Length: 236
Image 1: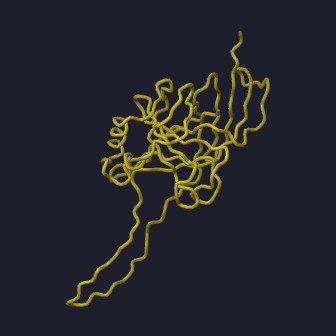
Image 2: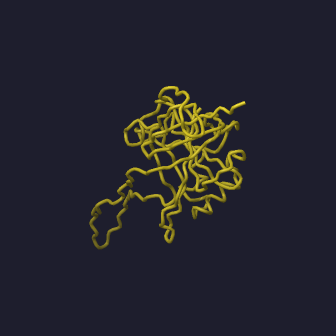
Image 3: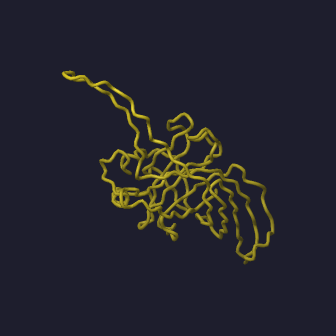
């Protein structure tokens, strides 16, 4: 009996993911990153008068950039294809303009999807160590992934629910109904995950993104070099 094979081609703002699947699990591809930017934390200094003999109360509001996190965002479209190993198309099923599923990012290019599970406390502690954090840091993994109420979802045949999670901000500067971030682990590697939404919210910069993905990055002094992340996508 011939094995049915399915290919999924995804165009993201980040770049082009080309996927070739023979079973239901995440698959990776080539990524071309788009433009990057960062928040300008520079603020012109303000003045307060000093006069001999006085003591003066000051309230100072400042902004500092995190040295532990990177954000990715984009849109996903896809086409379901039935074809052979040479790329010949037997049949296609339209344009999946609003697919559901997940986008994953890991520092490993060989995630063991059969072993995927929610990140444990031990996994989180190890990730914090890699990021140069302690649990008490305001932007630590512990203080970021504080929820466990994300929608259940499948990674291959594994149903995941109750994992440590959070939500990226929407255009109102708050956590809305979407942009779920879920922290997974394959017993060896951290896997940062975001859930695609068929009805995407307006994103952090007032544009309607399908996903926003938070990943850990150690940018402490002495670790300023960029870290490679490998991206995987699964459509359902």
